[in-house]
Amino acid sequence: MKAVIPAAGFGTRFLPATKSQPKEMLPVYDKPIIQYAMEEAVASGIDDILIITGRNKRSIEDHFDKSYELEQTLQKAGKDRILKQVRKITDLADVCYVRQKEQVGLGDAILRAERHIGDEPFAVLLGDTIAKSKTPCTRQLMEIFNKYQKSVISLKTIPNTRQNKYGVVKASPVEDNIYKITQLVEKPQNENRKCLAIVGRYVLTSDIFDKIRETEPGLNNEIQLTDAISKLDEVYGTVFDGKTFNIANRFDWLKASIEFGLETDERDELIQYMKTFIG
Image (tube, rainbow, N blue to C red):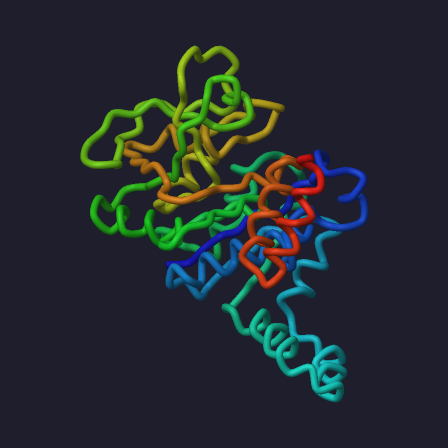
C-alpha cells in the first residue's frame, strides 16, 4: 500500500512562525511535525510515500533528501550518533512530491495523488497531525481495511464544544470498536451531543478520486475530503487506540512537545522546570 501525506496548506493559524517556513516543518521536541507522519507510515509497512506540497514548501523536500555537506561535517567531527540520525531520515522511504497549485481544499490536494496511486487503495496521513500509540494508527486502519475491503477512517470522541474544529461522523457499531459510517459533516455548528471526530488518518479506496471530482466546494469554498468520502457507498471507522495531537492548533503543538520531551533523558529536568510554575 502507498501513502499520501498532504502538506500544502498555508498554516495561517501558526503565523508569524509560518511566514517563512511550512507549518509541517515546525519542530515537535526535536523533529518536524511531518517526520512523525512519515515514520508512522513506515512503521505501518509502507515504503512508497507521496507528499503533496505547495509554494514555499521546498524545505520539506530538502529535509528528506541527502545532505552531503552536513554528513561530511558530522563525520569529520566524530558525531556518529547524530550522523546516524540524519542518514536515517534520508533512508526512511521512497518519497515523491507533487504540488497543489491552488489552495482549494484537502479534497483537491488528495486528487493530485491520483496518477501516483492508480486504482489501488492507499493511506492518507495529514501532515499536521501526530498519532501516538504502540500499534501505529495507520496500521490499525489497514487491518480493518483488509477485513472489509472498504474505506476506513480514524475517529476519536470529542465534546460538542469542539465539534466545529473537526469533521464529525454519525455511525452505528458493527463489532467491537468498528463502526459503519452513516453521515459525515465537516466542522458542524449545532450538534448537541458528544461527537465522533475524524483525526487525520484514512485508508481510502481509489474510487475516492471520482467522488472528489463530483464534489462541489463546501466549507470555506474549498473541496472538502469529508464531503467526498460521504459519497462513497460504504465507509467504516474505528476509535483510535492511542493519542492524537492536532498541530493545527498551538496548544496541541505545545502538549505534544512536552509529552515527547518527557520520554527523553531531559525528563527529570523538564518536570522540575514545570514544577516552578505550579507553586
